[in-house]
Image (cartoon, rainbow, N blue to C red; front, side, top):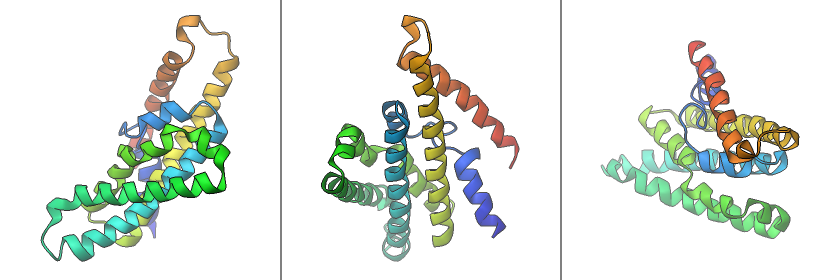
Length: 191
């Protein structure tokens, strides 16, 4: 049980996809302007991470390895991720069209989000069991959510701040992300 906890904390804080591994930066900067849209995007990314981890683990262990075609893993993983994102996009469009409009292009970009592909490759490279893969994906999703929530809270406050014209918008977001990255790199000394 302590090993699962270590995997979870490692993926959420120590090896955070956005601030430590620099994966998933497009939705990080694109959707982190408002807390509501950031949390919605985080939920969608977390769901895709967990579902993709489950599907890719099954395909890797029951199809690719037995048939000796492990070299096809990236192609299969991308196919699985793209399919899952299309299903989520259809579901959100039919159930909450306003949320679908908020996401805009970023929902489709989950397909090419390196963080989602990254977790599936980490699960494979670390030879995690099914449960360990699920915990790692959930930890990565929680870390993704945590960072997006922090960044969106900061960016909402920065919109009200009296900052220089040249620093408004994306420039101050880059500086803020750099400071957050430095803060999260401190977690590397804990584990």
